[in-house]
Image (cartoon, rainbow, N blue to C red; front, side, top):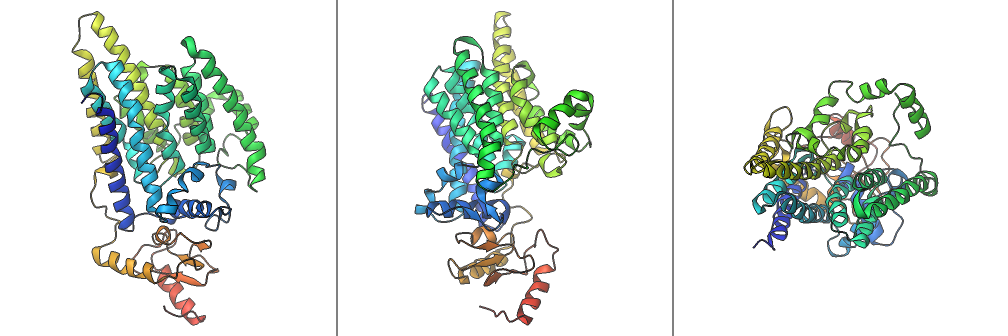
Length: 448
């Protein structure tokens, strides 16, 4: 039983994540951004076509270098629908438990503790927000972090190199996550492997920014912070010239504090017992909280990486606490600390300020009603496969297996327009679909 426990745990995590995220999609709770646009890219790649994403208006890799899309594309041969991406993501999140489980068991010396830390991994508010927000490479990459740590600590250098490469190819910001994690791990007999990986990652990041983004017709724009500068050099100068201002920016406005504290409070701050992980936390913190975009501070997929890193740091920190307590005859201290971490995780994900954790909610308020769902499914079924289409946000992921897919902004650029007057119309006001329908009918559009 002990030997199969990590795999049983992984299967349970996979089932929970897939069932809940796919239910959200079936009840028209998913959106064109992100699930619809990512699915269009994966679908195009599965047909060996260039992933020119019409929702983005550019090549997919001009926006983000998310080469994980290529790995996800073959699933479209079996299941050419957005649900296949949710299956892929759930599989990775589930598999991420396997190394984390073993790390916890070895450091904490208890199968029960390993199970509890696996629960913390899944139920941390950042992971819950991530898996219940469509599909994103950041969430997939976060699930690879435990593999990097486990393979390194087990001395499997080749496997470690593959895990680092997979993480770096998932998305360009995760190159920095991988680099910082390698620096965190750079100690002991395998120090050279970690430092070599960090050096390669630094070079790869420069290649991505200076060569690959321009190659795909894009300009890297996601790690720019108006308060500090537009380029890496400008940001570095600003931070060195005024470090206190750069630090204050992480906490200003005050709304950032909730997002900053969430991953650490979800592990009862046990991560501070592993101070070397401060290096690994750095890119995850700076990327989000130097930003002026409030959606990066909280919710969505942005916290998945730091949430997993906090759990890994907590496992190491609790392991240190166990060694310290055992030498003093306090063998009850470490198990109590593990329980405290679990309780903190549950509390944070349950408090109104942070929760309730979306993974725990069976039916969210924004899901379609049963009748509205049936109507929306009937609407989706009437759209000709492959036809150029403009559709509302929550319809887009159900219709994204086509070369030309657009939002319902003016001017409408598609032969077919799918509108559901019972649904919300983000990013437009609620009455926009009805108004647009009237305008299109007057312009000569018909009703299918």
